[in-house]
Image (cartoon, rainbow, N blue to C red; front, side):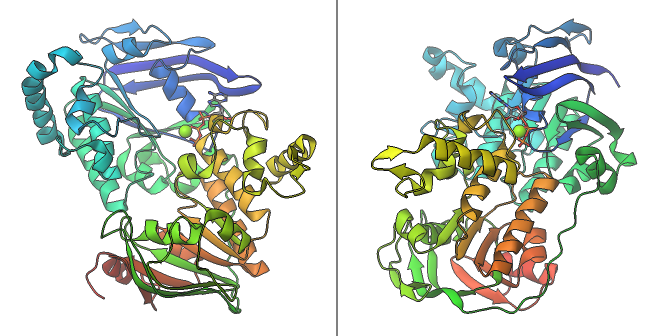
Length: 503
Ligand SMILES: Nc1ncnc2c1ncn2[C@@H]1O[C@H](COP(=O)(O)OP(=O)(O)OP(=O)(O)O)[C@@H](O)[C@H]1O
Ligand SMILES: [Mg+2]
């Protein structure tokens, strides 16, 4: 196989954090390379250097030109990366919501004024790509109205439209259902037959083993291993990632206590009819984890909004700890003893422009621990942050750094610290393990089980059936806004109910 890319001795630090330390990796034509590592290991940083978004401290990058000759790549130069045929789909989407899919694809590569003329030709080119790859998106709809799966296809089409020969996907399946993820990889497989090379970052070992040719593992910024996927198994990769075997979470049997949350025939209007909650009944007891399984977009967002105080029931009754909740608001729900781990960590979880320490107390700004006579108690806030960073292993540029500089997994640890620290009676955990490495995922599971043992009730919303099965005392499938309790813990049976095949 011909080499298309060489990363040679790349290093990058941020303040005292060494994000990448002398990393060298090659990529070949038609190859699918999986880049693995714990949260904060430096995967995104490495790819950002490849794409020219970050300037390396040292090292070089070489990319094959159209004749296959390796050429030095200008560093810290995104436009040069695009011209060399490097395309990147970021961990967080970057599309303009009010523009159509087609406009988004053309944005940045076509002159705005010549759009009208360019459009016909561009559309034909994109339709050709859609046909060859199987990656289909509605081109004339505003991106704001597309599902996450469609948005992602638009991002990939955008890269392919610019003739990417090397495609970088940063956690492409974190927001996809298992079916969507499989389809995505099949489409990628079709493109690699045409010579496209792919680097994808993922924490899901099953898909890494199924769809990659080669695996590279980063740990604390260093490349610690490379292997052919056919020589790898879950255990060997896991050991390479964390430098030891990962702990297995054990779930002990436990009798449920008094009801903490009761929903009686609750309906909530969501963004669309499908995303509403219809006449839902649900009881969650102390010492109980109730798993809400389902394909996303079936009412999960309405249920989460309800329990976060962001939506009020249109009809029905919600009782928390024996008190009926009539006028919901986020602060009222916190006062009722509800802690929430939101689905969208960046938008709903933290204020990116505030620092780590402030984010850790953001939900309790009016308490005496945080504030005295109208002044924030800076020292107390700092001491609190230092302690929680240690307890919850929040790694990164420090408690004074803005929260948006944390890696995805460390951001989640910040939110966990904030929730678990105040021993809530009811915990809403919405996709709490998404995007987390195995160690961090095991830690979330451990904390949820600990809360259950202490007497909390947990509502666990997840698309990941393995996560639901391993943690839940009771399983409820959400489909089309209805909640259906399932007696069995059989994968296949639950899968059928999720798909709406049986009621
Ligand atoms: N712009 C930045 N400023 C300061 N520190 C940064 C910046 N970008 C990343 N870091 C730090 O560099 C380290 C590596 O981060 P990176 O985002 O590359 O990790 P990652 O492997 O992609 O993790 P995850 O799986 O959680 O996405 C982390 O400690 C992170 O906090
Ligand atoms: Mg990352």
